Image 1 (cartoon, rainbow over the protein chains, first blue to last red):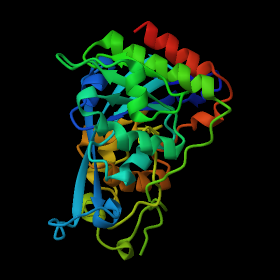
Image 2: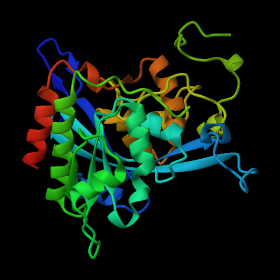
Image 3: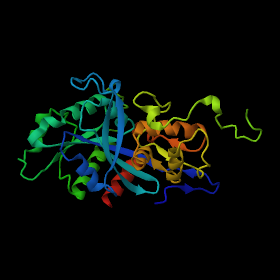
Image 4: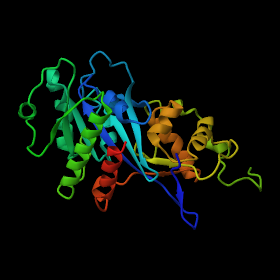
Length: 203
Length: 125
């Protein structure tokens, strides 16, 4: 992959890197979706947090622990020599808001994966993105044997703003995951100029 | 004392011991810069011979980033936490050995061309 282009003066132009977050409850298929569309299998990176970074959560039982490691899976899609898209799965533990803030900073938007059997799993993600002003869509992951609810039922259950798209998605399918990302990008484009700049909310 | 031909960027013995990055962070020390996880790290030149202030991971980063690579990818390749890589980058950026470019926030993108390119690119994947 040749990222760097040179003009005649020999000056280098770096590609544009953009990122989209993939959020949702534990085990909802975030890493599966990242893997389905990425050009390589998902990479893993870690953040080490001090107790201070963990915030105001209940840490009963882990008082002696001075640091916590939060893992994030991510993937890359090279759109062109000039444009690279990164997909980041948000850490499943919703209490690590510090990491969420770091991931959300500069993100184009988020796909919140929802499992209709455990719909409450995506509440924290939705709350977070609403508060942060980061555009998002909800993608209902169609698991085998999962009871299918109508998209409007899901919208009602999640108390979503009427402008937030709700789509069906099979996180194992490349095509279906691509469609979810495209739906998000179209949603972000539509809202450009109307939205405010995302701000960190977790500190 | 500094030798007359010594590189001025060198840190002398007054700078104290070189500490392993794990020890440098340890959940306490904070990097001066906090780069975005998709900030692009790019080393314009090959790695210099190991200098006093450097740890081998500095050289690894320079080697890895002869083409631009996102910070998260650097961290994943080196199997180091993001915070540690931020600390390591501080030293490299201060000496001009790598450049780190944060992405432009979506709100400041001048038009829809990036979105259109992304949608087009995804469709053709």
